[in-house]
Image (cartoon, rainbow, N blue to C red):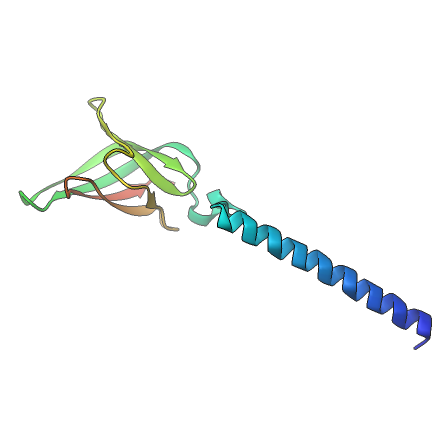
Length: 121
């Protein structure tokens, strides 16, 4: 191989390496501030109001039931449960819960009640 070809290969290798390093740094920075490349694709649920089936259980009373309700989704997390009577559980009562690839999330509110959420896809 000629000396010119060797130099061109070295320069190309350096350029490609630098581009990959920059891409990795951007991904790390986005991850550090809580942004993934494809937030909606992680769980398959779009941000906004979504229909959900919710299995409710109160361990203090033993009462359980199933609701069809709306939930608010942000970045693949359930951030609010909206009840049909106008009430809701928001950040004052629940922590955001991650939605898995099946559309499921588990939430416990500030009163110890459990909500198994299945977001319709």
